[in-house]
Every structure is written in structure tokens, then in C-alpha cells.
Image 1 (tube, one colour):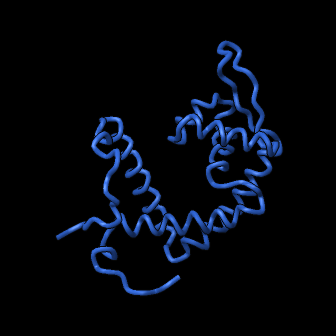
Image 2 (image 1 turned 60 degrees about the vertical axis):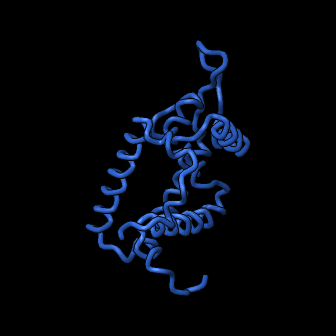
Image 3 (image 1 turned 90 degrees about the horizontal axis):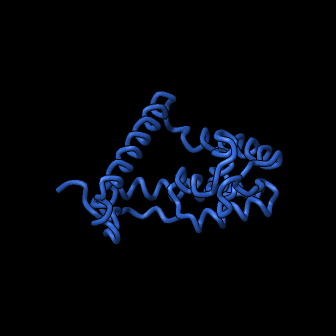
Length: 170
């Protein structure tokens, strides 16, 4: 990766810096998960099922904020690997409950160990207090963005300009 100097407009942009950190972090994490045959989104599905128990696919979609068609593909991929199973919903024949399997749970715990090691490595430049503050701030920002979305403010942003290239100050 080139280490050329970026314009101040970019280096001083919260959105740009957040986006590039997230992109690199996700790519590195994906590489760490390759031996397990899952990606971070599939891992999220396993974690939710492990914590919440069996859920219908629509509820899984709600948890992750992804569309139902994408969830169908995710669940089918996990099912083909033996990490989840599906059973018909008792009262809604269109719906299926998704269950984590023993193999899925084992994969989840292996991935969790990898995740913890990766997190320690990636965030080693931050103190434990800074990590806790960052987690708190990210959770607050997430909940705030959900509130904005629920208020319908995202309608104006169907095709927003790339925020990475917008100045944060004048």
C-alpha cells in the first residue's frame, strides 16, 4: 500500500478515516477467518443464533439490518456447511426457524478466539480505557444512526455523495 500524503481535506475527514480503517480492518479479519470457511457476516448470524436461540430468517435480517434475500443466501450458505439447520415454522408455512448446529457452535468459538487475537493486534495502539471509550462511542453513533433512519431522514440519502470526500470543517 502506498504511503503517499493525502490532501488535508481527506486526512481531516472523520468519515474518510473511519471508512478506510473499517475497510482495511474488515479485509484483515476476513483473511483471518478464511481457514474456518466463514466470513464476518456469517459469523454474526451464528453469534445471534447462539445467543438468541432459533429465529425465523426475517428476524435475523432485522438484527443485522440486511435485506431478506441476502439473509436467505447467508442461511443457505451456512446450511450447506452444516453450521445451521432449518425447520418449518409451526404456524407459518412460509417461514422457517434457523438453528445453530453443534458444528456451527464449534466454528463460532474458534472464530471468537481468532477475533479476540485479531482485536488485540489491531487495537494494540489503544489503551484498554481508549478501547472502552471507542466501543461506547461506536454504540452511541450506531443507535443515533438507527434513530435517524427510523425518522425517515434517510429518504434524502438514497444516493448520497460519498461522505469520505466531504469536508468536516471549513
